[in-house]
Amino acid sequence: MSEAHEDDSLSAPERARRRFLTQIAAVTGAALAPGMVLFQVAQARALDQPVSSKTRWGMLVDTTKCARGCDICVKACDIENGIHSLGRPETDAQWIRKVTLRDLHTGYVQSLPMMCQHCEYPPCEDVCPTGASFRRADGIVLVDRHICIGCRYCMMACPYKARSFVAEPLHDQVPWSPRGIGTVGGCTFCVHRVDRGHKPACVEACAADGPGALVFGDLMDPESGISKMLASQQTSEVRADLRLNTGVRYHGI
Amino acid sequence: MPTEWMRKNHMKLLFHERWVTVHDGIFIKGRSMEDCLSCHVHRLADGQWPKPTSTKFFCQACHAYAAVKIDCFECHASHPVKAPPGVGPDGGNPLESEARVAGPDAGLTAQALTPMPIAQDTGGGAK
Image (cartoon, chains in turn orange, red):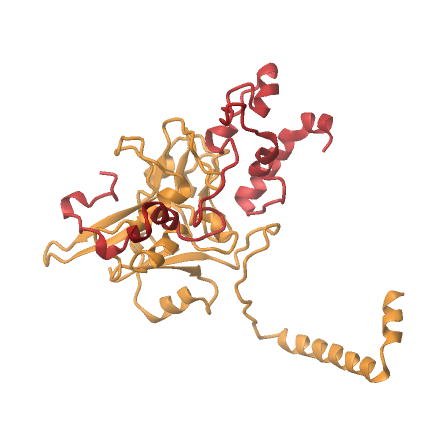
């Protein structure tokens, strides 16, 4: 009823123009449907919609830029996720760490950050007896602490030593990154940021205060910065022999 | 929500919505743990936040009587926290606020840091 009323208010040429545009749209849609694929530009997801496998979040580490002795990414992660030392380095939580590699024959030394590699086939998920360790549809590997029983199988299974167990009561957690006694934790790709269209803390800090060795983005979007970089330079997975298809890839190792 | 309804059903909301949030990434506006706390938790007269085990804490006021032990606050923050600049869900560089506190010239650069000897450079500052 209201539609007819609106149409009446339009002049005759305007109505003809609208009809024409509507038909054009219909024809274009039909022509595209059979063989062509339109790539949707990556946008921040609406928070009331579930995550989808049309996105896969990933990171590229340029080890030729990563500076030895620099731990800006580690500091940023600790501040962002409220991780504090309890004075016992052997068991302190550690979501990202710096690793130094030295070629025994040539003495060539390089430094790189190591964290959860957000595998497509995560061993931690395979071994978890309760389903607490899981891979979200958009490729981020997380721990659901509501159902984690703290058995630490995932820590044993992870080839990257990416997870830490919390053995003592904590009191100073930050609201956006819950973690606590009796549960395992690890890098979340700063999922609270990514869900709102921002980059992880380590990436932001490395770009602002560090050498800018970290690139974060959507691996499924061929137009994203990370996809173009991955397509144009040699990169590798750590422990590629395990065929886990990691979401974190390294250039220069 | 009416109080009587909420007394009977709040745990159902918490159970269902924690699953859709963690596994499907769906955030229902006004229904996060932070949203609960922003109204239900207040500073005590001495300016401190109540401990989640204290009967002055909103949940505990009933749960102590009903002998129900909740473990939500073993992981979740038990009071509202205002994110410093550069930290938290709104993105930014977390080291930004640290540098500001320490002074304008204290911003860290990779070049300014002393390279670590290899023997000490294992496990990112933990060892």
